[in-house]
Length: 306
Image 1 (cartoon, rainbow, N blue to C red):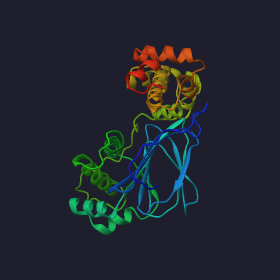
Image 2 (cartoon, one colour):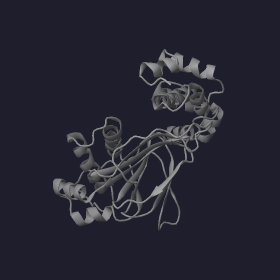
Image 3 (cartoon, one colour):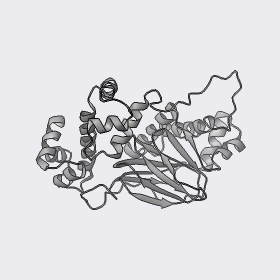
Image 4 (tube, rainbow, N blue to C red):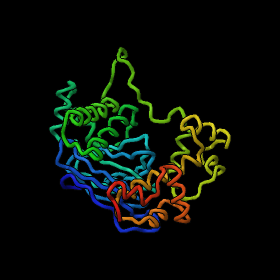
């Protein structure tokens, strides 16, 4: 887990997503070091960094994290962030069909800058990052870590006012959501709610979909796994996404097709198989219906012809 900022192409194609790497980004030289992966199920990665780490999943991904010195691995979803102290050995494993996961590594300078900027006691702040534990991801923490991933990985901004603000804000939020911060009764309660706390049915459904994204998922099975009725599940998806679960799954698969098309390493037929289509013609038809172009035309229009 070291190096300068870089994007790497995916591995050689396979009929399934096991071991697949769609995207990879590493930069441990910045004030907030970052390692980012978008990978297939059962992908594993291991290592240790000299800085404390924040490990989290994105977009309903599930990842398993084994940390040296702990009895059992941690299973992280969209609601949790794992803090790992500096130097601890870590092994990551993707559980969902495709997983997005990131490791943020604040350096000593960033920790001191955050303490100085927000008048946080240095010793308690360092203590927060000194032992392994999970914390609930607040809505604000979720928003700022996703924004930092966008700025660093997708927009390619390694250092500007936006990234500097997001980096200190993440460290501050980690401190204020940990037990190290003891607000008085006169302090307004911080939002410690997680994503989808008010819609547990939706959380269970999305986690199951992402785990089985490229498999056949029936409405009956999804409702059973979500601990609800088919009617309730349809109502929840219509309210949240204005579409049925089946349409949501189709769109998610096609979203991943775009990433694979940009990747250059996969033919149209290989992408069709990876995202779960039985025939190339079925994939082309579904892609055309949504994006008004064939997959090959979409790729060629972006200069990624193969």
